[in-house]
Image (tube, rainbow, N blue to C red; front, side, top):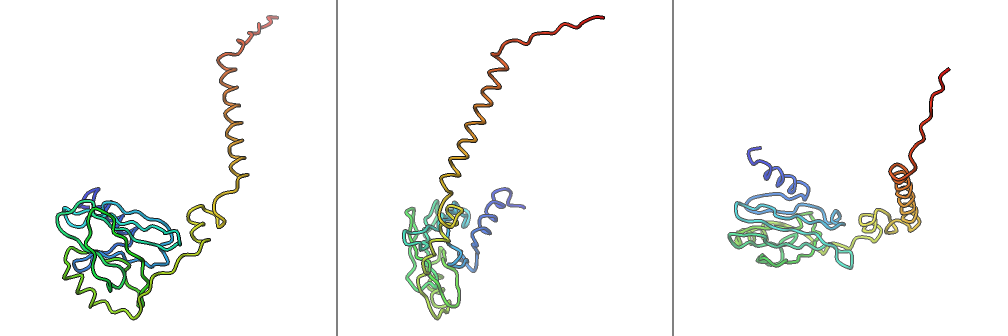
Length: 194
């Protein structure tokens, strides 16, 4: 709690995104099968003067892609995708796109560090038997997460009935207000004295 509200917020963002700091690098340690929706992580603190933006976006072919860019930086940063077999990519203020790769055994899908030599060491340290681009997610899974329904969206009859109920409620409310303020004054009844 020494970090204050900013530290708690960063801890929540790192936890929700499955980000993990390890030995001079930050890794996105999630499974490719879990990246079936678009996620945006903004201003992830990496040191005192660096903020990263990491986005998981779905392409037209339902494959997940990672976009990484620097929001603020005091030095050069590098990133590589799962397995780190490709050469490290220097990050800047324009988004760099990485495919999500499925590795056997399973590794993180993204690595970020300011030390290029450390990134080269990761390439030789991570032992993977197989690295392939993660398969596309099935349409019904994407539709379920985008629209809340496996067919994609709610039926038109639902929206028509909701609109009808809202209109009827507001008409009733307008009639009540009109009768209260603009209606004829109440006639007072006299009491009969016996």
